[in-house]
Length: 140
Image 1 (cartoon, rainbow, N blue to C red):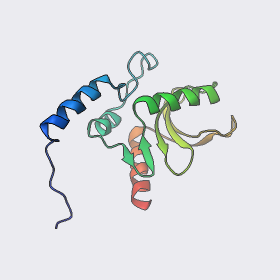
Image 2: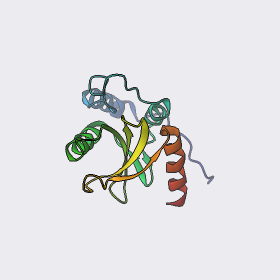
Image 3: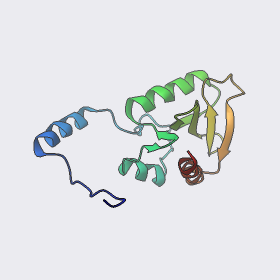
């Protein structure tokens, strides 16, 4: 057997019909335009990851749907002085990756830390964060 598995082109038709109906009833994967601050647009890199369903970049997880919304609200409640849009969370600690609307950079926020102690670092943009996340994936 080779290193790669043959790609399967979808589930059996009966399962696919159920999955499609369930998918239509689900919450959108990412925050909608109505949920996002005015003028904010997701970067192409994140949209591509979601399109390819690449959500698990161990140790980072791209958050989606209800989980994204729940964690995003929690961050807003815990850090009301920061304008953050969450998109990823580490599985091995409480670090989160967020867009910081005030600095226009990607901030690493240690969730549940006391205010003013939550900042763990930052990246210039999403692509810089993604490169670091891939390095973490290789080393994890």
